Image (cartoon, rainbow, N blue to C red; front, side):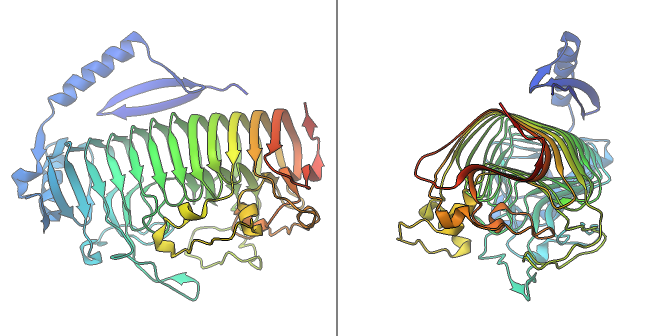
Length: 504
């Protein structure tokens, strides 16, 4: 399944063509010279220091207007660098614009206001999911860079942005850290991002995106703290990033358009939920995605989740050279029938009684996962309690509950009746499971739950400890080594309505 991925990214007007093959970048001498020349040109770009526009940096003054004045002046001058020097600059919503590089010095912090009134929404478009509030915003803009050694800290703790719900629906207003829509040529380099009140960095329908050496520190801060939400984007390279998220860490979404031509490589990722996730928004699908040479750790609700429940298609996915430690369910591939259109906000629940919303069932095929070493564990209760916003209590019981077993379950590949997952190859896989399965677990009937929110542990304890495959065709296991560390009376593999399974 060798494939070449072409990723085109323009940095300050320069068009780069980079051929990616199994995570290796090949640049010609001419391309290297062009990069150096462009770097020299960038060093000579006009600089707009936010202090020159009235910013103070004492952590007390509200600096939104000063920062925005610097951005506007840079944009109106044809582009350049908006410099954030060392200091603590408190801001509400700011708009980035075309040809602007927001550059943070070491010791510089942009601090999100703790007052929701400072997150203005006038002129902001409504996203297809969640509300419009955000700290940093851009729309219909080109050639934007956020770079440097500084920090962007949303300070979105529950003390100031608590999650409130009524009748199963969220009533609180919690801003994202960053939202960009319909933008082209985006570069994120070096900056550390912290503590959003809601989702972290969300890009919607954008193209030609490069994340390099970005640090995300969202874990145990607030509900729904996704790391990178890449929705309907094309030509995306995510490399050398260190991501610690509360919710899904690297999350590809497709509420309208497909995510296409995505490369993730050389990243260290941990999450309270998933390290790598496709969905749940999956109307457009996910096509031509390569993830290689990554380390996923401390992900108690699962590591790799490929989910297609709103139509669209998952096709040509290559995941390789992954080491996973202290994770829950290691690989979850789910084709379902929630059928959401994202033309309006919905309030469908997560229960087993939810019904399809109307979009035809999609297609999952041609998925290759190789060279994976994983250790699946029961979630550590004391680590779980570190997410203080959840108000969890540390139980002293040593008994492993069924909920804990379900979160540390086997590989699961499941379509629905009449709709098969096709052409999945798992090759050179070594996974160690915790065991603890009982005879009662082995005899469970597994509900179909075709429209339910696609979380593996919602299916309960599965009747196998190694892999559970249902409604699938042409599934191949090549050199797949599965073992348990304690007694488990369940079967190693359970196949249900599977055609063409091969193990060798």
